[in-house]
Length: 312
Image (cartoon, rainbow, N blue to C red):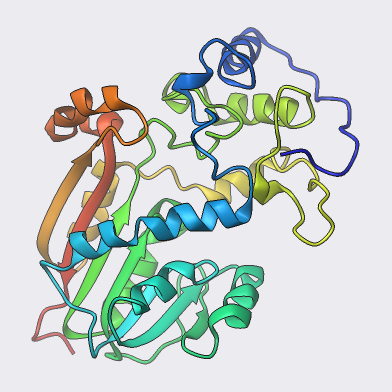
């Protein structure tokens, strides 16, 4: 994607580790010899436009239906999506089953788009880091997809989920932990797998800030203002915001969080790589079941939690 504005002078890169990270990153970008092993390969188009990005996310809906359906049906229930963003996944679930849909999101801009697009059939509420503005015992099912790693207070918001669930209600959790190959969420600009296991987040952000303003990086669609077509100000300079955006939760920490709350744990599994993007990933799938190695070779962690029937 080419943004309709001039590219400023790249940020200065200092320090040996930062320079090494930058040099390796360039091998995966544009015409680099390792491009086919990164997430900026030509076959992966979600970075090119928001339409492509949403389409790829929605395309996965059948996978989530298949994953959730052995444990709960949405039909006829009140269903809440925690971290609904712009509402497209929740709307896609509605194409499969009829239910009362509620989308919960902390970002007011995303909520505004969600209401404009789906407000006629979905109720949307704005959350706080530790609060969901819904009554006690009011929801049958809560699900969250690729959101746990962004919760600044996961224990508190999970306790809120417990509060708003009806007794016997189900909480479905699906997320990718910190040490996954692209746990830093920088795969479009630093396409090195497991970069966050080798370099500090400060180093990664310094490199990302440099690349963002360099000709080596084709800016991803979500860094372009959809109205003006211009690239947004460098998003990698504000490290405090990235600390808020990513809680760096590990699988081990997630287990600890859910076990400290009075949920019944119905199911808990690590899903290994499936080889959809990289066929070699299938060979590493079994490592998602091995202690310690699971942190690095798990595509997603999936949990099914129940609020006890006796809970008020």
